[in-house]
Image (tube, rainbow, N blue to C red; front, side, top):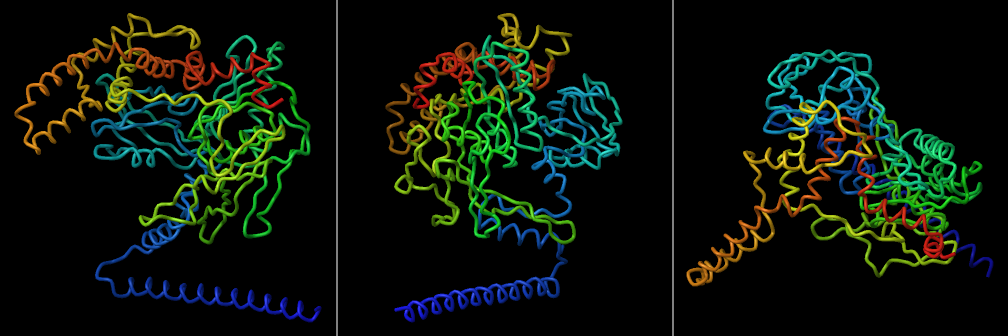
Length: 544
């Protein structure tokens, strides 16, 4: 029997070696084929071919057959890589947007070169380093404004019909990963985390410690991860470490290569093991956000509130390559304490159109949290308390697409030197009436589902030869609807007021003020305050 097992083992090892050798031959063969194709293009193709551009297209096409997170970056894209990983880039610190073929400053970041130079939202960028922006895209202008830290860029801008020229010294722009923290009620603290870039855990820790120090009566804390697409995994582990004991498993990565299979435990003493916690997530909370929310859910340490998260359970590493190029490659999947992987899309299988498919419900597996609550894999992070999503009305979409709220805010700032504090400013009847009057001569065209249905019904009736008999009814219906549509500004006043408030606040108090001022009407924040203030409800949700 021993000899039999020995023979079987030799056969298995031999087969594996043969399979490995066969795969190696296939790789070598296909590399040679690719090399020949590439060489023949440059030898015989009728037009000149840009070697770098051709290779980039080929590499991108190859990687697109995998997952969207495996990417190749030539040396020229290093600023973008730095921005993704560190939240840093060399630039002037301003968002820009395009309207009617013109490029405008959309938002200067507080304390950065554009802000210090006196540039304001609504300024039209006419030239960058003497080159006109006419016909340029936002990407073109953004690239021209970025550059090596310490170098200068000259911007010519137009404001109220007057031209101004400003020379700005580019600097390393570090985007704040914690743009705001504060108290949202007498006893509940709030911390907003935008990205898991370098020092994210340090900044969250500082915010939490300061909240406790300055508010001894604080009885709960909200960590807001909505819209947070993730980042560095070690920062996620360190943030969880603030609220769970040392030695807890937070996440395990499993990959093809043994070195990529790693268990990450909490390594430090926690900041607070007992304070009630709520974590806010939505459909844009991904990756590291899901490690934090998922592990705190699995350990029954926090109530998760909001909407189901994105479902990205893939881990990427940056690999340096020759000639200062880099590659971001998916090397493993991560698994949170209950043992589940939250990856929601199966990129290894695609439909007939080449689209990756969602993991089917039949393949989802049930897992248990520490207190015995049931959670599932392959589904992102399902919140413990779901808050219904809010959808924009058609008129709000029209106002946004036409940048009419933005343009009104620009005029508002020119007429008002100051406004009340961020947490007390509101859109009054006077301000809203002024906005309605501002729109009177503006092009606010927007279509509704009702209009589309009437049009479709008219087209179908015409095709089926019923139009003549029902034309009067359709005309009457359309006229009635147009009369009703005139009242949309009043029907959707609350929603539009929120848009106005947000845009005006950021002009006076930057992003921090916008966040602070909008919290009072935030349904997820209100729900979190309710739950954290009710001990029995909080403990019931955690299965205690």
